[in-house]
Length: 368
Ligand code: AMP
Ligand code: MG
Image (tube, rainbow, N blue to C red):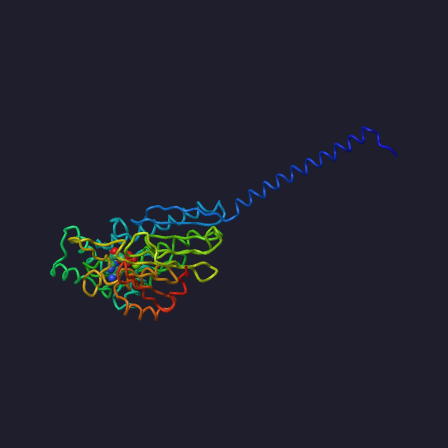
């Protein structure tokens, strides 16, 4: 049976319409897939705000929509640590404690960092000592006055220094509910005149907390936070390779001595460098390290730089400072006993640098 021309035309029309719809739908699908790929292909965003009196680098890698909020959360964490533990801000909780205010019930995060500081002191036989603050201030004042401190000034400052003067306990009768961060109520006791700086570990703590804040509630492909020489990364950079962490020369700003890489698929790596090239006192044309040997009250100038790898950035930060005081021989002996901690000292001169490694450090070095 023949179709009438009208019906045939209708049939043709329908075929054409269906074809057009198919073209439009597949076009939209392609556009949709392209947009979805743009939205879900890992891309990265970096911000470099100045926080804690130093330059910072924060990078998040993941879905575009996650990046801004991840970086905001990380910056908020850095600022929060600074508000609590800064010695430069007179309104920080630590500054108020140092000014002699009742140290009962200190913030759990401050308690946790100070507890780690005291642990570092006992591990390093006092080479790490958060109570060096009177000496730090003395040397800063001396630098401003343009002359080293005299013996009487040194002896006075030293009389207030000593980590055993600090008692940090958990109040067993009045613990904080377990839902509080840290879940403990810390009670701090120390004699009048004793003052604390947590500058040697607060940056590392801030980096750890910033990375945790970046990741909370999101599936980032990777990320990295660096605050003045303290760095933590995880996952992968946007190119899908692995993170490469440059170790700077203590003599030439911006010159990279070697690059380190994470060893596991998690991409996790914590690296801190302590050295007298970033921050130092200058008195009568001579540079002095900002790291003080608590045993002598003098700046610890023997080691130009120490780089430490550890399971957390706070730990790496603490060890990097302590090893600067301990020096190569004593330092390497102690590090070998510390599981998960590896160190590399740089000594010598710009033209003749010498490297001293703990037994597990070199496996992180990228052969180039
Ligand atoms: P970092 O840059 O991590 O090595 O920390 C150095 C800062 O920690 C100094 O600017 C001081 O405020 C403080 N500090 C100096 N000497 C010591 C020490 N022996 N133990 C603990 N903190 C120290
Ligand atoms: Mg440190």
